Length: 303
Ligand code: RIB
Image (cartoon, rainbow, N blue to C red; front, side, top):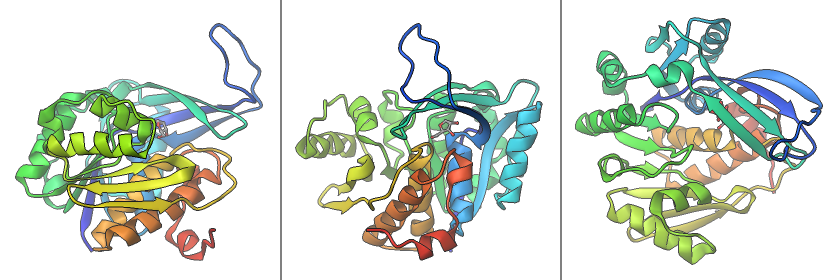
């Protein structure tokens, strides 16, 4: 089995459930409050560990109680944490509201995540060097992401970029991405092409391929996912489930793809596995609290 390294964020999620999302200037009374370990990077690392992947994570926590909880959760899930460093500041925090349709809205205060710098990647280079697959997202400084991908490619690793939260990326980042895993909105922002239908997705994906991305898997929520490389195109339908909270579904999907590739599975098998993992994730509340274990995926009888 190939080894995986996630470089990215750790956040404590402060989650409130509401019926409807608040409007501008509106105060709402929510129904519950929970603190849940999250952060796109840590969610992906934990998803990979629970699905049986060999995983280390590079990231930063603050010297506060949230930092300790976030680190302990990674350890409990058997993520290798030698490259998680502590900074003299607050840990990342995400303020999340989840509505009755399972949709969320998230605001992140990055805290220690934004202290992950290029020199930290140099100090943790063994984490990349000893891995085969490197997974990054966009909740750490953009220069660090650019540098991490550049180093990973110099060391001949397979790179996965989950471009969330989406920002326009320059070509020096894109050219070092083997697999890009955007949702439709993220692809629209990255490519600058407005997406209304499947044909637009193909055009936008091809734009990214021209810039150097080798392949894309575009997630379409409850509809499914699309695989696109320079000469192939495949659609995979989602499994139908009763969604109660979509938080971390994109993270678990990307993590599941990394695990499938670490076991040399085909694209079809990898997409099927990741669809099951995404479906199981939306059936439970929270970020890391909702990530399934490999046994859950094996026992999943989805339609
Ligand atoms: O993708 C979900 C994650 O986004 C949450 O866990 C939150 O921390 C934000 O990073």
